[in-house]
Length: 458
Image (tube, rainbow, N blue to C red):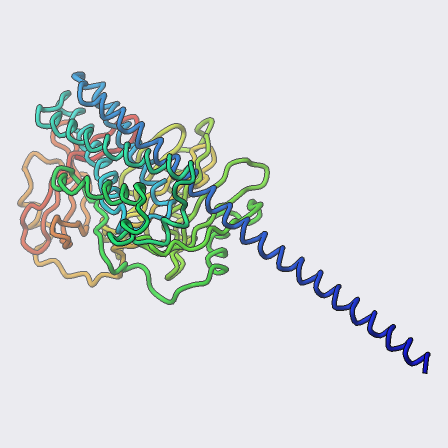
């Protein structure tokens, strides 16, 4: 009897021991899971803070450059200043895309920055040709400078509140910033989002969108087809964008569902490098929407032609086939090339992708594909109603034609026109002339300007 009791006690002790071990294991599992959640939240907060801090930095710098532009009287200085304004605007947009602010909140701000870049670019080309800006141009710049002050103050206040813990990214991402919510939380930063957005309602029509660079805004993103992909599938896309053997750590920052294009957002850490990249992959279709890999390039070793060749090969590898180079810009041993889709020999200018590459080794440092994502689809190409010879009759007799091609160009009414594109020279000035392939009417004339920094049009 005593032996049976002892056996029972022994079994109870073993059972209790097993329970305790299981509880310890479960506790470790729960702790690990919570640590992973906290780690992921930490990475998100850190990346959002870093991106937003850079956004504020470039907007502040932008305001300073605009201030200089308002008093610049020298054509040369105007060109340098306006070029820098365009560059700072592009950088601000890059970092704006990396924070979880919904389209509803800052859509006008994003458009303001994009169009400011194009407008400054167009003015710099005008200054190259005329060697000065008109009084109307200077008044427009002054107005833009005033808007930039409001934007800088609003974003700076919001950044300060985030840094001081007055508001968190969790709060920002949980709201669409409607009036009821703002009144409920009584938080100045959330109201600031709306104030910033409303600031730019009065500048519509002032900014020039630039030649064929307007990414026509559409609710239906034509290039996004197929089903939604998982986060694991998106990681595989990232590994195609970078050489996977170079990746040391791929950090998931979760989904950005309130953006104009819902994306999975990742930070990429590399082996033998302190540089990091940020990349957004569309949830639908798994397309690369944006990638930035800021790193200093010490020297140039490859030509523009070699960079272009590598750029096309790279775009094809990540799912963007049949792309043709259009314009390019050089900056600090890097090249940014605008590529347009080429359908059966017809250049489709609305389907644009920007690719930034190192001129040291051809490494890709940036991708921006929103124009392509918004507009790309297989077009039904109409047969021209007039021949190319008939189209030439509408050209200036002095134009010495160097090349001719069919092209689709966008219009200000968000439609598209099939045109004959003629590239040629009058004296020493190079032009692009677009003749409607259906009516024979002249649709557009662009001046081509080749500078040390690249090929521009105006």
